[in-house]
Image (tube, rainbow, N blue to C red; front, side):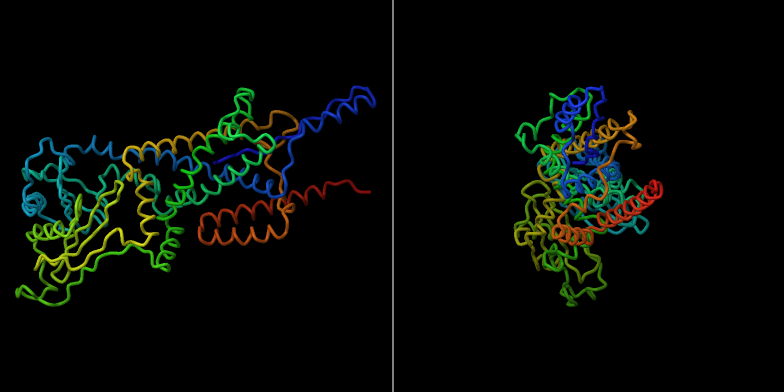
Length: 487
């Protein structure tokens, strides 16, 4: 819940009217009701952090929300833009043998190495991937009508994604700026959970004494229209509604980030919770008698027997067939179902015998590996279909509104009177950490340091902020001391 709110400035003191003790008593009586609630040490420290983090990190979050909103509906955009390649207009009673479909794709694309085949079903085309050195991680995908063998189109894809989806994916991850752009998305994911939890605490704390479900969950319609109080209530109430979803997006986004993601992978390895894969090694035996299996190339014509062996072994639904590059390696057939329940069972098949030589079922995956897979699919809007997409779109729109209202509060507190000297509104007071109990402060510092080590793009910006804040505070303190009157 990104907020740029700060404590309300104290109202100007009542003007003296010559009323003597009566005027003084009246002013004293009114002051407690007009003065803002003074936060305790921890609350003031969190308010200051939330204020500055919101100001500095909100632009990253805004970009992530907008690009994520665009990416959410890529399945529908793909169907609109690449309908001719992805779908057939008429379905037949039965599909042609997969080997014939691969041969049709090869005739259309004679260059490149055959790497994978995804058989089509229903109105979906069969997708045949060819790798080329100049494409790097990308592949050239040929789309074949499974009922007629006609080639419907060709696209350069990235991990099966169409050019449009690939462009939007990279746009969301790094704005097409490479390594530098990756920093933006990881900073956004690293700070989102901090802002959400901090905002929830501050909103809960502000309502003490008058806390009700309505005050926490709905905007304050009694506040003056156009005032900072109404803006703050909209900002906070919307943040409460989307908080759980934002925490989920932050956590899942960090799992495949550059630096925090690497630490997450190391943790999975240490806990033996990495994603398991089938073994594809067949050894050096030459069961066919046609030469060394290490040098013999895989025969695309074997794909029919490989797929049948996998189907007979229980692999149902959409699958991807991995083509080996030599005779000493087994073929792989893996489920690719992204909708719940996710299908990720896989088998390794010896093409010389059409026997399954290894199998790994999704049900046997470590729990953390399953959670990671489910989380990634939900983050991408695939796990629950259109419902998943709508929820992600609402989260993105809600986050955009929260950010806009946060900056609106910042603008509403700009200096329009002589008692507001800050350039863009008065920030929470510096030095709030002095009011935090020493024991709590020590534990907090240790916890923050540990989190900063695991999530570097949370720790490094936080350390930089604290260093700058301390330097500025010291310089201002020295300037104030130098200007103090003597004697």
